[in-house]
Structure formats: C-alpha cells, structure tokens
Length: 110
Image 1 (cartoon, rainbow, N blue to C red):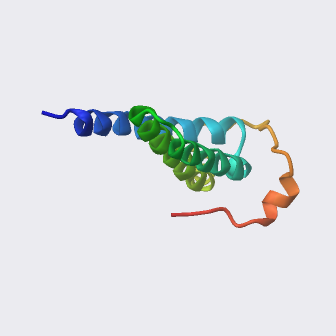
Image 2 (tube, rainbow, N blue to C red):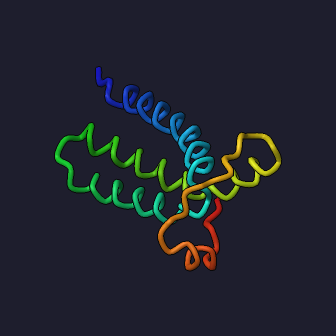
C-alpha cells in the first residue's frame, strides 16, 4: 500500500490552508502592490521543484510555489475586503521597490 498520495494531499491541504492567512498578512502589512514579488517567488519555487531530487521536497516546493502564485492574484481582492472593513487595515504599509511602475500594471486575477 502506498501512502504517498494521501500524505501529499494532506500536505497540500495544509499548505494551501496557510496561504489564506499569508494573503491577509501580506496585504495588511505590505499592501497589494507586492503582488509581482509574490508571483515571482512562487514561480521560482515551482522552478526549483523541477531540480529537486527528493520527491517529497519537489512536490512540496511545487505546491508552495503554486500557493504563492495564487496569493499574488488575491492581494488586490484582499485590499478591497480590508477597505470594506472585513479585515483589519494597517495605515502605514511598507512600499515595494518600483512602486510607481507596479501601480501602472494590471494586477492578476483568477
């Protein structure tokens, strides 16, 4: 009997479950303009999973990278939820590098 599928499913569920608070936390303290950095980090993690020899590490890096990439698409929506008062908002967010350039880009959405 092979447990890999069930254990990987549980690990995926836990990782994606931790992605929700990650989006809330990043938007609260940093703001939605950090989405390219989350997307880039997610893509790097997925790319790193291709070169990882251990199957568990490779699978988890892929899931974690996909979670970060998904989180980048949710930051703008989370900012709207915070404006509506559904989540706490921090008034002094940390601006990302190249803020004015990023502001001109259309944020990704799924």
